[in-house]
Image (cartoon, rainbow, N blue to C red):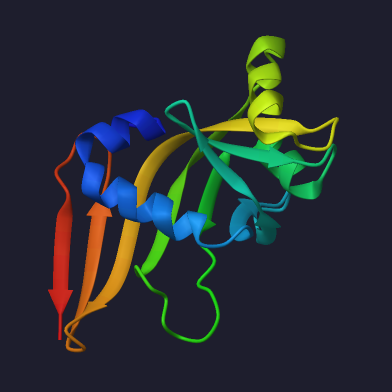
Length: 157
């Protein structure tokens, strides 16, 4: 089961706000894709939350774009920032990236983001959103959301 960003925001607005804030704190984040041989590849990436979707834009014919065209599964981790503070915690998103070729959709993205052209544009379908943070300098808290299920919170000392 998958969901777009709007469905996640509707289901868990507080967590979605925290995740967007973490991604908004820095420009570049880490995208994990699968190479042709099945091994993982990590790449830097900028992301955008627009119109109820999480968008991934990439340079033409980049390795990460080729990876996603071959196998749409991805994992995305927000830039942890400098030092060890990670204000807001560590956030990760997993799902599938679907390339968008529709000229009208791409034109709307260009109007908002002004990316260098040409470019690949991928819309995401989420399978999991995870936030990990420390509470009261004592507990490791892990929040896990998957489409169609309630938010799970795991607390460890």
